[in-house]
Structure formats: structure tokens, C-alpha cells
Image (cartoon, rainbow, N blue to C red; front, side, top):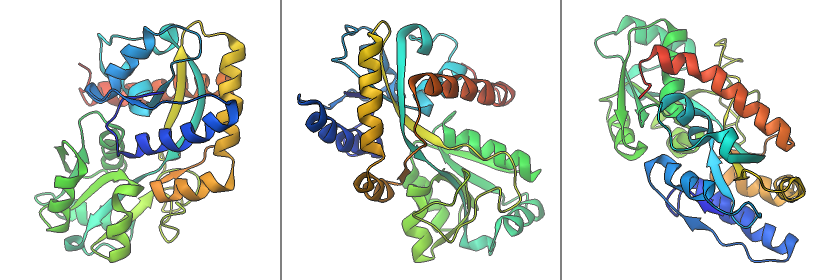
Length: 291
């Protein structure tokens, strides 16, 4: 299994968690290979060129599979020409958090603060054209407020500025904020998706908070090289789906900031990828993020 991100991150942890159990179920070794770089695109290029025999699997995410194709005009791979979507294996929720300086107790109060303080209104996001960045743009649009988007290379530095009050808020994953929210050093306003996060059950969804357009989550999933026999695709789908549905994985997922998605077939996963591209393409274009 080729992971396009460094060892120790959440995607890598998920791949190792599933890989260990997949090895037990199929009776053969599963090796996790980290080919980090270019936000996962190096890993995609590697798997694209691999033999379509089921021995090489791409562990991708929404950024690599959906956002990159609608952002980069000269991408070195085509998701549907070069890969066989297998299964969506883990969802992760996005969240908007406010710094203590705003005094906001809920989304409505935070939006009100942003509107009344245009000279101070700024929101941190990790990485340009990332899911967090696009979610932040969508939130600012929904808020109808003048807000500066401050782009960082990761959440560590961004979090320092939010906690210090130099930034009024941030958009990232639930896992990025959960510890600080519980400690009371910042407040998560709302989370994406149809259900509340198991990690932050006190935080409403955007829909519950009265803000529409945030019903979908980010996700990690598995893809095989194009031309892999359908029987192998279905085998991986069946076995990984069974692993993800186990109570043990649900507990571990919560620790990693993931939630198990609804069971999905390869065709359903492929349809979700296409729908995601169509949903995000207009925002990427309108924001001038295409490269």
C-alpha cells in the first residue's frame, strides 16, 4: 500500500491500522510504503505505473483524488483513466474554530464578530487549495463577511497564532482542534457532515447551526491501477469494508479523528469522486486557485 504522506500522520495511521488487519484476512503480507511529496501526487504517479495485479494499492484522500484534478491543469494522472476506485474507507470532519479574543459562543456570534471587525477578521487554513482552504472560503461566503484568509504550510504554526489571539479563527479537521477545544483555549463553532463528531459531541453540525452547504466530509480511500481485474477490486472492497465496520476500528478511528463512512461499492465510490469534482470545481475556479 502506497501512502502519499509521511509516516506518523493520520492517513498513514489509518493505512497501517487497516493494512495489519487486511493481512490477517487475506493471508498475505501488507507493506505500507510512504512516498511523501507534492501532496500525495508522487504516490499517485507510482501506483499509476504499477502492474494491475492487485499487488500495489494507492491510499488516497479527497485532496489527491478530487481537489488536485480540479486545481492542476497539467496533472500527471487522470483519476478515472489511470485508477480503479475501490472503497471509501474513512471520513474526517472539517471544523471552524474561533479564538478566545472573539468571545463568540456559537456560529452566529462568530459571524457577527467577523462582520463587525473587518480590520481584525482573519482565518487560518493549512495549505492553499486544500479542503480546509476551500471550506474556509465557503464559510466566508456563507457568512457574507470580509475576512482575510491566512494560508500556512500546516496547522502547528497556525494554531500558535490562533491561541495567541493574532488570528480570529481557523478552519481545519476536527482532530486538529479537539484537544484545544476540550481545554477551552479555543472554541469549535461547528463541524461538517450530517452527524456530530464523536470526538466533540457538544459541537453542532453546520446544518444544526443554521449554515447550509457543509453536509459533506473529507475522506480517505483506496484505489488500484487501471485494468486491475474486477474480482480483485471487489475483494479489496469487501475485505476493507468488513474491517472498517468492526467495533474495534470505530474506537481507533475516533482516536485518529475519523468516522467510518457508510458501506460503499466501487461504483458508488467512483460516483462520489465525480460528484465531488463537480461540487468543488466552481469554487476553485471562482477563487482563482487553478494552476
